[in-house]
Every structure is written in structure tokens, then in C-alpha cells.
Image (tube, rainbow, N blue to C red):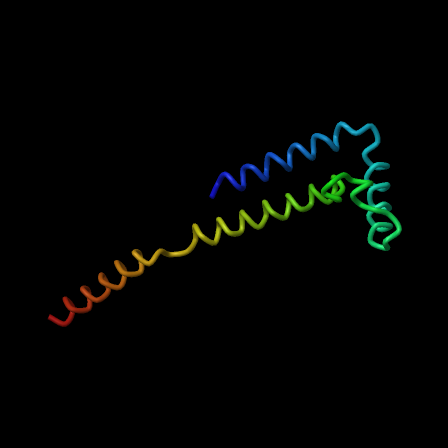
Length: 103
């Protein structure tokens, strides 16, 4: 379960490094946003602009970012839940303590 999150973080870092190496990342990002909007209107083909997956670097980065956030939420929820075994032990301990109080 940790490998998926680590792989997503590695992809996220790779995309961030690629964006950092771009000579003018602000202009590229703005141009990609314009192309994406034109693609949404059907005036441009995203596969021609962004490659076979049809997603800009910014879109890929945001998708990976959301994936990492969701994986972390899932991990936190899993780690914070009490297991069934813990519930049974607690229940048995409570029952035993109530029996000894009666006697």
C-alpha cells in the first residue's frame, strides 16, 4: 500500500522537475491552459498538443497531487481505525471487569 503512494510522489517530482527545466514555465503553462480550453471547445485536438495521453504537464501534476492526497487520507483513515481484534479484546475485558465487580 505504500508503494503506490511512493510511485505517485516520484511521478509528481519528475513532472515538477520537467516544469522547472522549461525556459519560460509561466508562458508554457498559460499556453497549455489556452490549448486545453480550445480543446474543450472542440477547436483543437489535445492529443496533438499534449501527446497521446492528451493531458498537459499541469494537468498531470494536479492529477498526481490529488492522488497523493487521497492516498494519504486513505492511509490516515486505515491507521486511525480500531481493528476488530481490538474491539473484541476491549469487549471481553469490559465483560470480565463487570463480572468481577458483581462477585
